[in-house]
Amino acid sequence: MSKKLAAKASLIQAPPVPAPEAGPAPERTETADVRPKTAPGSMALFMASQSAAIKEADELREKLKAFDGARPVRSLDPQTVRPSKWANRHEHSYADAAFEALKADIAAAGTNVQPISVRQIREEVLNGSTPAGPSYELVYGHRRHRACLELGLPVQALVTELSDQALFEAMERENRARKNLSPWEQGCMYRRALEQGLYPSLRRLAEAVGVDVSLVSKSVSLARLPEAVVAAFASPLDIQFRWAQPLAEALQKDPEGVLARAAGIRSAGQSAAAAQVFAALTAPGETEVLNGSTSGPRVIEGVAGRRAVMKRDSRGRLSVEFGAGSVSPEAEAALAAYIEKMLGKAR
Image (cartoon, rainbow, N blue to C red):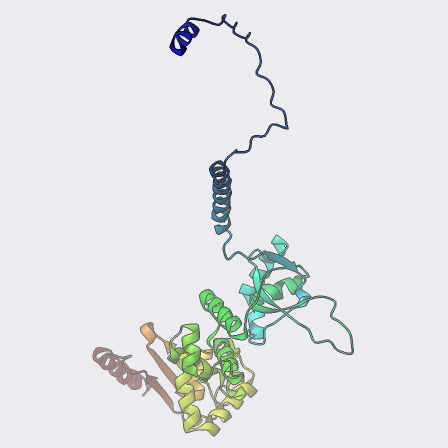
């Protein structure tokens, strides 16, 4: 019976339903619930949103890499910046043509284009008073700072935090890269670091700054010259590395004689060439040089470090000394022939 009813029901067809007219889709209301109805759907939506956030963070991280290690440049009053306790610039460094040219460039630009480097320091509170503002210590850029100070212009600076050792090493690297620090100034910097216990030895200092220990030793030897010897030169900036050992040996063998010659040169008040002063200081037995009664030695410089020193002593005797290897056998024979001819003419 049921089979017959089912067969008859299958023959019955519902009237066709007319298709809805084309029109705009009904607007979704704000209250429509679009959240997933199942746990897997919620997890998929969460993972999709997380992926977008991670991608955005990665993009920002890539952009920030361009600023890695960058430090903001600040415009400071040069009066708030003081020289470092490791400062190695002699006053003559601020009186040469190069400094005047630097000063003119800064004046034209209105400030230093290349920033100096400083570290912030805490001023001690005296009598209950508090400093008006922060103070800074120079790391490097002493000449640029001095120029801005003299011109009354703001100084552009990178402010960083450094230990004493890190400050010293940064200053030393900067000076060496510029190649405008004299051997004597470099030696003063090394000597001060050793005397104040920044490094326990010459070797440790040399390792820290990445230079040969013999260079540090020569520099310190120049910086430890007696004040009278340094004062014999028109400027300590003229003292050369290669003079460190001969001057040290001369002082060891005859300290009184070297100091006497230095005093004589100083009292003469003449601006003799540095090479002449060096030759006079290291010439044994010469106590009256570069003054009114005795002519100073004449240093004749050649190529490849070859040189000769011509000098006359207080008894009128003239001598010429050639450095080892300065004269070839052929040149020596020619010189002898010339002296014979000259002496013949003198007679």
